[in-house]
Amino acid sequence: MKKELTVDYSYHSHTYRCRHAVGSDEDYVREALKAGIKVLGFSDHIMFPDYSMSWRGDYDVLPSYLFSVRDLQEKYKDKITIHLAFESEYLPQYVSYYERLFDEEKIDYMIIGQHIANENGELIFYRHLPCSPAERALRYKNDIIEGFKTGLFAIAAHPDHFMSFYPEFDELAEQISLEIIEAAIKYDVILELNISKVDYIQLHASVSPVYGYPHPKFWELVGKMGAKMNIGIDAHDPIAYRSPRLDVAFDMIEKYNLIHVTRIELPFKRKKHG
Image 1 (cartoon, rainbow, N blue to C red):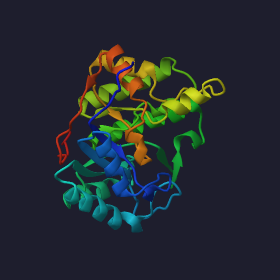
Image 2 (image 1 turned 135 degrees about the horizontal axis):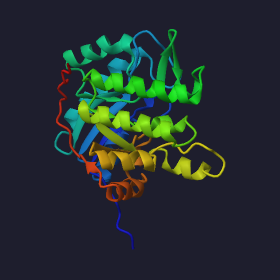
Image 3 (image 1 turned 60 degrees about the vertical axis):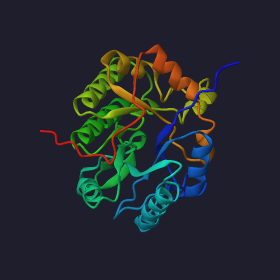
């Protein structure tokens, strides 16, 4: 019988406010406890003060998010350590907003999760940018590295996300990977091996030319270069803590000799890079 694989931390969890997750905030805490999670980080998609999108909460839900997580932090303090964070894109126009959240001690850490780019004032998914797949992948690489340079981010969510809109792991994909990994090492950002799409990828592998993430070749390079990583459950449903595809993550950790970081020092102190 195969041993059940578990982790006792989760730094990447969403809430219903993002419009594509389900369950109450307390449901996530209760299910995390059942799964043996000792450190739980809520990191919902950040709400922008001046921009509305269909797949994240509007700015007016920010107070309820902050209050709810801090309330649960206190309520369950004897059972589980809860942290408050955001998954945020690097977008230059919002850096001062991010800094203010830290300065006012509203959040404990931030994850960089590049999904969208600023295209002439519009926030657009990389896959929909009006350019070639190569240019999109390069744009993603440049943006995420600029995000690392700010020192605002403790973890990089799905750093190999560009492979969900780039067709093959060729020389360009390898070069992009190398530059992202080198920057993560230089700026001390933990790379997240995100397992949220594993079942989707396996289900659609025969009909889609896009592999997606986690991409084995990316993580092979992570192991060779010695960058730090952790596992991202990326929970959008409370049951995710009990039924993630952790076997894939642990297989990669062993196969590629990855440096698995299970704890980060919080609250996060912004790193000052010259």
